[in-house]
Image 1 (cartoon, rainbow, N blue to C red):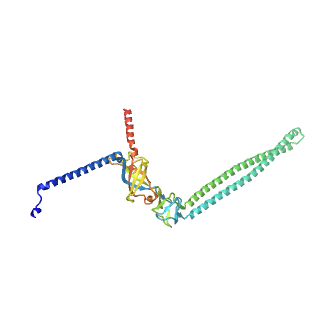
Image 2 (image 1 turned 180 degrees about the vertical axis):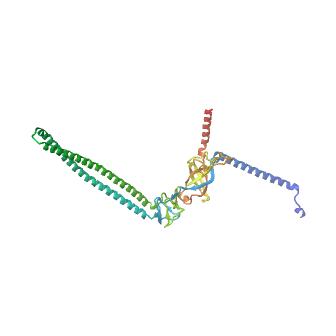
Length: 382
């Protein structure tokens, strides 16, 4: 019994320790080999495809929201939509009290009627003047005939008076009558000229009345535009947001009342580092992970790349030529279009955070092509 309880001798335990060490060594070798294989696979995948995947989590959903503002000022008579309501293009949103603008339109209509009446009155005056011109021409013709007859009588009696067959008093009377007839003819000619010039003056008055009518008509058109603007409509389809207008509120022209967000045209603004956009091109596929949709991967594609970094379009662009300089990696905004179904789009709203990975593998040859071109240009300049 005592011998069974004795601890094993060192000689008995030595072979066991040797076997455990070899097993551990084999496990370590297998693990090391697996790590090497995995590392090689990762390296090969990275060199062939992985390095062409450019990812960023500095990305947000955006939409080109439309600010709804009235064209005219006035009191809000009715609001047709509620907060966060979906609307269609052309749908009425707000109605403004338009009675003042209706009165203005009626006033301008009256001015148009007055101008038309004035033009018609002047045209009637032109018709009367044409009759007066005809009368003046007839009187001128009669006066000229009388003057010609009187001149003929003078010419006929002058030899008779010279021979003593007629008295000189008769000849003097005939000469006086001839002078009067000639003066009467001249007066009738002047009256005809005045009557004809009066027609031109009346024509100018007609054109003036017509111009006044056209001005009033333009005012009517402007008043009708204001009258039609009393109902503010949605210019695009989308969802109402940030609504601040209320019934009875006095709104000024151009004052923001609400915004319409076109959720069907939502897109992503992804800010990639400048070291990531060298091979980025429009049309390249993108993988999208939205924080609000955990575990859901959406597809998209590069739509366009900004013509400058975000710093260039900031309120105060940096001036690196002054003072000390510390190089900071800039970011370039990239617009990503979302290729998602209606169920996913129902959740997406502007401002959400997400992560974007763009596959630039299709442009891998561009870098070599650029390098070859620049090398060729460098050799040509040497």
